[in-house]
Length: 276
Image (cartoon, rainbow, N blue to C red):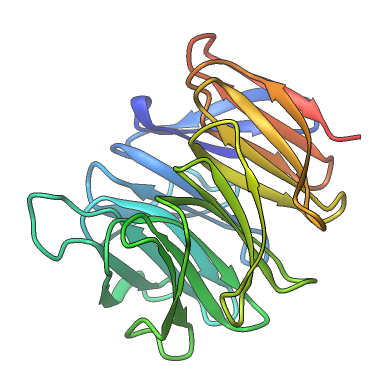
């Protein structure tokens, strides 16, 4: 597992089989996120402090290619078929029109398109069946869609009825998006139409969310009071709320072993939970 350690400007690498920290990958200024493509054997990083994305092969962490993108990249998603990486740039409130979406040709190691965004970006994911990138926008409250075949513009948007869309994930089996909002609300919506199908209350303002396709569970990290809200996705019923630590807003998910990792900022450790 590759984890963005923003305060250290490094990626921490964890052995999930042994639940053991292995090593850190340094010199990724202000790194905000990491994305692994198992299909391509590549890892991507969003280096918010230097306005670049990093690209390296699994097992070759010393050879990192950096590509200049928009201002303060954050969320990442990847179309492994076309080799296109999308970086959602949060921008700078002092700079007009700096909320952008950068499209990077991974093979060529260059940004090929910059798409203006309607507001501050958050999380992004890719739907391989539809060939679409989905991106949460904090304000206005919406999810925007970019067609990977025509990645020069936003093709459509879906309105979200709550403040601050943040965490985002997708269930391809049901074609449903899960969107967790700063207002303490969770929504399941049809990815094709944008119709809200289900909603639920959260324990607070969320950050990262992960969908477990094997268990049909959704994990929502809430930094304050420091919990993981666990939902059953068919009905969006909350199954359990697991205590972590105040400020623990980042989680990781090992889909092979059904493990959830909560990163504890005060204890400087990771708590590991097994979804049995």
